[in-house]
Amino acid sequence: MFLVVLPLIIVPLFLAQTASYFHAVNGITRLTRQHLGFKLGELEKYTNNQWSLLTENNFAGRTDMVEAAKKSVEQFARSILLSDTEIIFAAGKNSIVMSTSTFNSDPKEFYTLLNLLEQENQGLQSAIIGGEKRIFQSFYFTPFDWHIIISEREDVFFKDARNITLQTIISICASVILAVFLLILITNRLTNPMRRIVQTMNTIIDTANLSSKVDVEYNDETGILAQTFNKMTDELDSAYSQIKRYAFDAVLAGKKEERIRHIFQKYVPNDVIERFFASPEKMLVGDNRELSILFSDIRSFTTISEGMAPDDLVNSLNRYFSGQVDIIYNRKGIVDKYIGDAIMAFWGAPEKHEDDALQSVLSGIEMIDAVKKFNENQRKIGKCEFQIGIGLNYGEVTVGNIGSERKMDYTVIGDAVNLASRMEGLTKTYHSDILISESLFEILRKTAQNSGLHYRLLDTVAVKGKTKGVRIFTVKKTLTENEQKTWSVHNQGMKLYYHRSFNEAALKFKEVLSILTEDFNARNLLDRCIDYAKNPPPENWNGVEVMKSK
Image 1 (tube, rainbow, N blue to C red):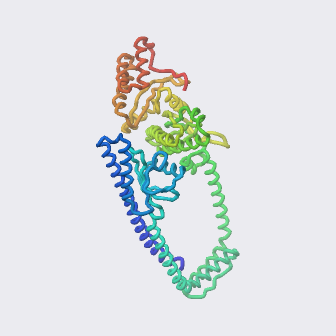
Image 2 (cartoon, rainbow, N blue to C red):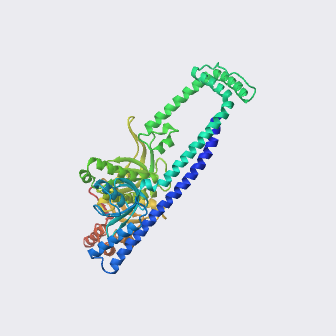
């Protein structure tokens, strides 16, 4: 009873005190933050005004006038200080160049602060400044090449909030102690009969002697409970053997399920387990189906790895893989395997979706965009950038668990997989980040007409090991202004090219090159058209270019 009633008293009390605490702390902290931000805004206005005066009077190139403006900024900064612990200062590239108060800042502390400032966070931040932990806000003033910071000691900034915290804790503790004291007095008299029942129950638990009984002392609810308890022990005694058997069967079933899951999770994604766990006999059955396959590879990875320390290389790869794999899973794909620095993924198994083809292409586009953001971070930390090529194909494959009893993989095999790998290899040849096959293009044209994707036909190729040609396309979600003008012209040129109208096709490719002057594919096709116009290909020519390597 004590434990039932106590929460009913303490919880509302605690919630009321907590709500008041957070309301007060948030209010005080918000006002303090706004006040700090207001002063920072005024300082930024004043600094901009000083620079405007210099530029309007053509003094921006005079060192003495610029120094005078900086001194004026420093004087204004001193004028808006409200406490002895508040400091306004400016950080240059290598040192503190202006400060309203003298403080010592060692180089390690300074460069740690500079790294924070270069992240361009606009809100409150904290750092060790002059050997003290301080709260600060900042802005970057380009003409002076200054990071201007307004800061306050952390203990001063949060002083009022901490006082409220202390008062709240004292109030809650006092209330809880009083409530507990009163409850102990009241419940002690009410729970003595229940305590005796609990003691008997503990005796049964410790000794496993179900013959132990509770003395029925009163003809009230506690007496009825004691009688019911005695009847229960009689029934438990007769059912004990049956309970043990059920428990043993349950443990065996649990162990079996755990073992199967443990083995399966080593090589199969979790959704595959959920699908097949109810029918273990299906786990080793292969299946032929059409799906979309993606290969992604880091270009010149050997050169990159030779120029990086092993730990830097591993850290960079882990961050790269993390972003790429998240995109694939978010787009309902399955990561089949890592092949060194390459990724193989597929869509359409074990669960098939109507938009698998579209999701695979969108994944490829987003993976390229993600690498651009990854490289921005690499540049900031002074590490090598990654460039990737992505190839996609759609076709029939065999999908299932392949391997041995010791090691199995849930994977896909077949010519469609090989062609997807070849498509990735062709991204280097055609200077494109992403290439898709003709079969994938046709599926997208049927099922994703309103996807907003833009396609550019680049060539018809017979990859290594094949004689039949495959048309290859590059694809984008968003085109630049110049690409909007040229991609449709390029595709018109390709139609003329395949109809052997080489002179007319050459005019189209020249039109593309007049806008995209460095476009590799337009230049390549223009050269072909000029050559074929002079030396026509055989009558059975079908536009296929035979690739000598992947």
